[in-house]
Amino acid sequence: MSLDLASLTFLVVEDSAYMRTILRTMLQGFGARRIVEAEDGASGLEAMDRANPDILIMDWVMPILDGADMARMIRSPNNPFAYIPIIMVTAHTERSRIVEARRLGVHELLSKPISAKALYQRVSSVVLQPRDFIKTASYFGPAPREIRNRQKIWQGAPGEGPKPETASIG
Image 1 (spheres, rainbow, N blue to C red):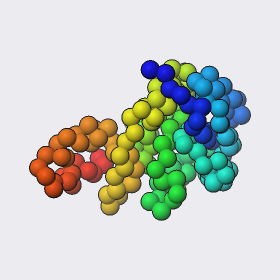
Image 2 (image 1 turned 30 degrees about the vertical axis):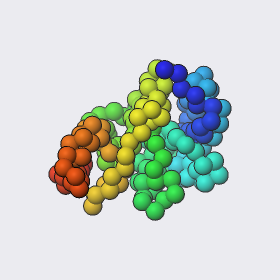
Image 3 (image 1 turned 90 degrees about the horizontal axis):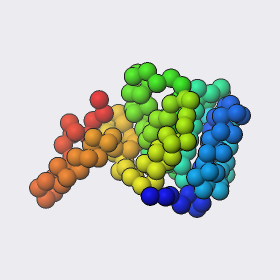
């Protein structure tokens, strides 16, 4: 299935000009026409207000405001962009980073060096398989896949909502 990305606005927040060029070129190759760029998290937050992006692609390690801090700020329930799909790009893919990305409310993690196929898969995932958001005492963000896939269990008896133990992030 081919995606029509021409109507979407992407915000690419990456401190490396070279990597921004790679990401922009790949997105343009997929048909994206509206791509806004920022070189760090602080300018990325400013760009969000101007560009009103549909999808955020950002690096984890950046000066001034890194990707993790930017994600924390965005995932504040009162932020107007709290529900934006976030694709985090990083060369640091150890388990602790993956767990932290999940706790930050990142939709997809993309490891460097990136491939066009991997980027397209992540963009396709956030476009074609949108995830409901959940809010618990310690988390606000997209429902983890295993919870999303249990939605039918949640809809068991009429009036029953999700069980508290299935809504927590481990």
